[in-house]
Length: 371
Image (cartoon, rainbow, N blue to C red):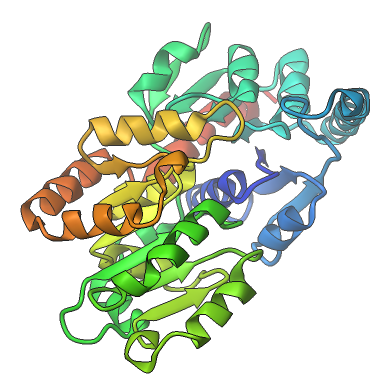
């Protein structure tokens, strides 16, 4: 029984793909053959390293929001990827294909449609991306994380499952998270993050308000690669009385779920994986959505705010003092924070990866019985 999982281009596609793969291994056992189709970028190779999957990189690139002169080249790469996938599926036909959307999924799902291979596409955004909208009608099933996305899928059975996340978020330890941060006394713990690659706008807004915050809260800042060295310099220049209350990391892997669960408040982008993780641990958050692409993060942050699980700020609102005021106002009202946590947890579906694995296995069974 061969399972092909598709996820590449960003950590938001890769981490969920890995989560589903691990649950499939638990469900089917070592007899299952699992292949991960990803992009050829360094991030893809890095995140799939040492996860126990056969990795099949394809050169596909996106064709939305790219310079006009690059479109013919990207279309050629799509065609090249289609041919590579067709050849691979000819050598060993998958029982089922599970795709996280994004441009990497396009040539794979097109091959599935032409060759009548069962397939599932899953998404974690309130506003679906172009690849998911385009390819969902060609798949056997689509799964979503927001009811707001249901009407955006046509001609395909759709199920609300949530977005797959790593197993560490199923039962995190908040006390271990505070211990990791070395929070002194009963200070509120604030976690600031901008997705796997960081968010410059959030980093700059925090830097402007940092001095006014550190007398009141302990800040753990996951900055991403680009701004990390600059923020280390910012920390070194803080007075001794504030430096211990500010920790900056390029990236956190081990212990991140505990840290997220232990935070009194989280400042974050509104990517699908980030929001799924926030809801899984029941975290209250200030969401600052990215405005790139088709502003799908804005739609996701809006849905979270309407549910009472988050407060939303737009990047253009990040004048000096705005982030600090919003944060301190929330911390000053514990009852509102508790309501946000309850609303966040009510949205959480920490076993989405297990549900997707089960659905995938069910689609694969008829194929194996008739072979």
